[in-house]
Image (tube, rainbow, N blue to C red; front, side):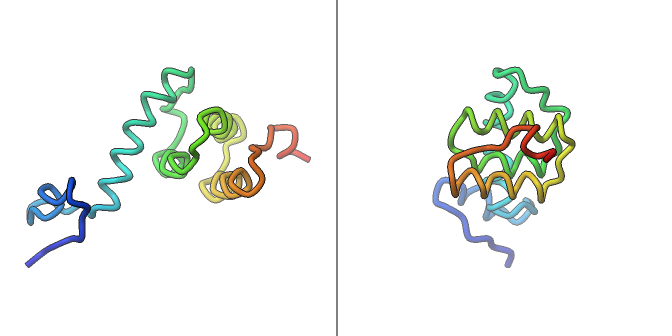
Length: 104
């Protein structure tokens, strides 16, 4: 039988054998969907950000940093690895670099 470990809230959906989405993937989808509205409400054109970038952005808790990182990803055409490194830096020292700092 096909079974995935799920949190209790998601168990009914995740354990259904016809659904081929892991609980982690489903969790990311929900986080990205919630974040999508937030970014749009703050003037970010989310069509210019790839899904994997959006997943990385969900790990930022500070909304201002999330907006800054999203703008940076769009304006500087950052890879997912680059945005992941920026998020690690933000978590370490609390700052998201500016475009000028990246281009040095």
